Image (cartoon, rainbow, N blue to C red; front, side, top):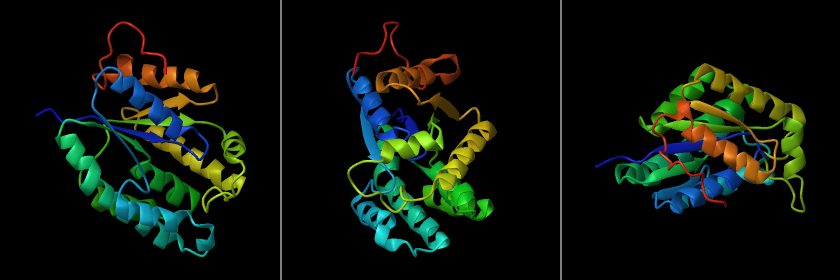
Length: 221
């Protein structure tokens, strides 16, 4: 049986990950490509409970290392319950965040030891790694502007601008370190234009056989 492709969307808060993941899923489903959409934290029932805790503004006193362990617990459950079984069944998995969020947020953002975070997450993922990571890149100022709305910010969204600048820097450092894995897509454009950039990043010469689209352009979404 052919295993599915594992595509991860990463980026700072407000970069448009959820929107672009959903648009790609719709485009793939229109071509009868089997797709599972999921997210971290919260891709499972247990993960949803962890997500509520992790993003609750009342948990401001959560220790940085405790935060990292909770994200790793969510990821371990996510891989075991959802990601690995779907890939084994030939379903393509699109995930809103994965391992690289921890390195960016808890590593560069919080300042935790990278070796500790890497080892922790290697245990959590059990050898499951993405085929490609789509990094939606926007300036920290733009990301913060986008998440300002009518609802109060969650625990992470309430961080200061300098925190998100460090997180963005961490993502770009990872992309530079693993250029064969990351596709950096500028996300400072209208939604449909960013979607076209994502499709191009996954079907261009560098993308190999991530997705083989027909010669005609992807359907409008």
